[in-house]
Length: 202
Image (cartoon, rainbow, N blue to C red; front, side, top):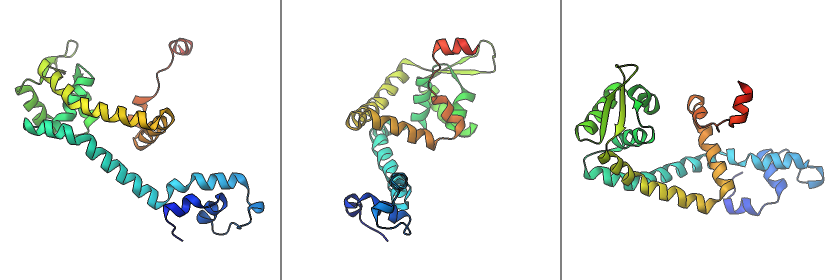
C-alpha cells in the first residue's frame, strides 16, 4: 500500500505501524506504544526515503561544487586539482603517501595533477628531514589565495545551512555522514580525548 507524503503526515501513529506490519491491529488499545515508536523510527528506511536521501546528496554536492568549478575552469583546472589544493592547505607538510591515502587515487593520477600544480607554483615540495625519500607538500602564497577563493563560497553555504537547521540537526547530519564512511576514515573524526583522561590512561 503506497500513500503520499501528505497522507502519511496526517495519519495517526498506529497507522504508521500498520504500514510497516499489516498484521498489527487497528485498535490502539491493543498496540504497544514501544512498538509504535519503533515503527515510526523505521520509516526513514523505506525505499522512497532512501532514494530521496540519495537525491539530496546529489543536489547538495552539485551546488556545493558549482562555484569552485567555475573558478577552476578559468585556469584550466578541475576537481582533482581542487581536492589536492584543499588537503595540502588543510594539512601543511602532508606527504605524498598521506595524500594518496586520503584521495584513494593512483600514483599516476596524483603525479599528473600534482605536477601541474607545482609547475604553476600553487604547491611547493620539500624533502623530508628524517626520511629524504619523502616529499612534503605545502601551498605557496599563490596556492593559499586559490584555496581561499575555492573554499569561501563552500564555507558560506555550509554556514548558512547550519544556521537554518540548528545545532541538533547539525549533530544528526554529522552522524549520518560518519555512518556513510568506512571505519578507517571514521576514526579520524573521533572527538579528542580530554587531556586529564589521556593522562589517566597512560
